[in-house]
Image 1 (cartoon, rainbow, N blue to C red):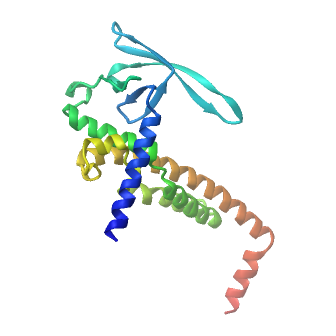
Image 2 (image 1 turned 30 degrees about the horizontal axis):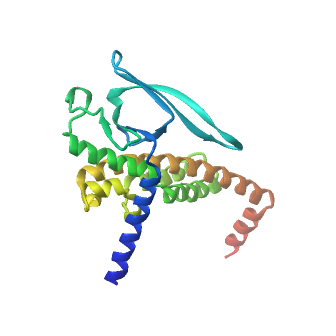
Image 3 (image 1 turned 120 degrees about the horizontal axis):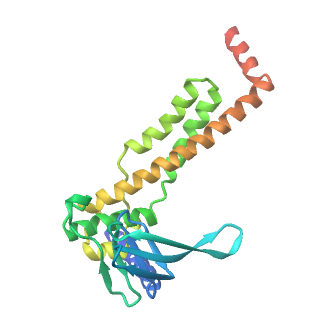
Length: 235
């Protein structure tokens, strides 16, 4: 049993390291919210303390990706990792702009947020939203429908997100072998993961409500509800 667990951990770490090695050779910008992008080009403007950069984004039904240009203030960035693997830090501890953590604690928080951005899918929140939304839509009541739908949003958002080993990147493991239980890492992960849960559950509830209303309309038009109610009345 213990050997299987050890081997599974080794495989997860090996896969993460392989992914990390394959991503080398690109300049990468890491935001304070954990969002990370691979850059085509960038230019620092020390006068305005901002960075102008370009990156590519895949487009649906089109083979060629879209090239996007943007500019961002350096205070919203954690770091820039260059092609050679060296890192340029933009983070500075400054409570005036909300940067209350010392560097290493901030790194753990941002890495947790990045792992949630890249690896956490929030699929169960979507399913919860669909189920509750469908139930509410099937009721087709002005008050009950949105209330039941919102329950499918509230339940996944209110619970803590369980962080699995598959969610943790090789870089995060490099900071701390037990990073998964580190409070700063968990706080960063939870913040982003809950945001994902909220978005997925709202979308799922909307899909479920529409589906429930359509199902209610079909069943009502076929007199199934009325037949069922009549049978209940005879019992």
